[in-house]
Amino acid sequence: MKNNLLSRAVALLLPLLLLVSTAFAQATAAADQPEMADALRQSGKIYVVVLVIVIILSGLLLYLVRLDRKVSRLEREIEGR
Image (cartoon, rainbow, N blue to C red):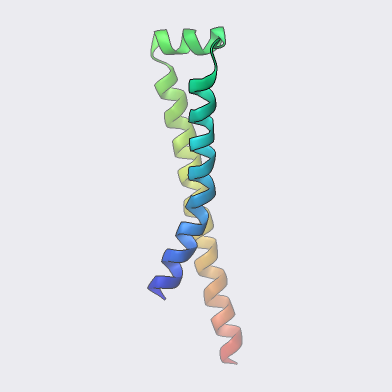
């Protein structure tokens, strides 16, 4: 049970990590950055944007894990009948 949950968590996190690494690679490769990013960085609001994105993605991940647990429980209940 625990190993199954761990493998599912890794399966959910792996695409997220790949997306983040791709975004960082593109951000460092870009020579000219948009003015909006410079303005947000100078005012310190970029950290608020990043925090909001992290909160949203964490909420989605938590929702998916809880949904997976509920579906697994229902599958076990159906198989037990």
